[in-house]
Image 1 (tube, rainbow, N blue to C red):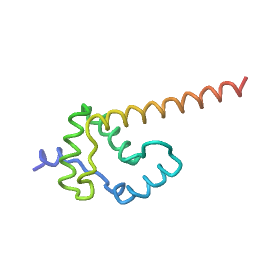
Image 2 (spheres, rainbow, N blue to C red; image 1 turned 180 degrees about the horizontal axis):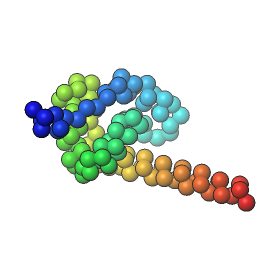
Image 3 (cartoon, rainbow, N blue to C red; image 1 turned 120 degrees about the vertical axis):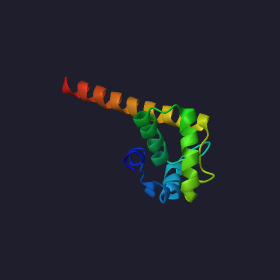
Length: 110
């Protein structure tokens, strides 16, 4: 029994209840194609990729399995390419923002 419990993964699915309001807020002043997936899902994907070292194709399968157990996630699972682009862009945006803050701090201190 203990070996089985070691393989359990527990996720907080509260982000699903805020899915639609989060998308509305993200798309409020957006021009062009609207976001289909909220930032909270992208952050969950990024955490899963880095913690479990899953390739994105396996991550798609992981989400498909989750969607069988979480009815609200059904038909909302992004495909491999969407996940890859979303995670890549989210990570690069965060990296760029940190660099800008670091540069701004360095420039102000001189």
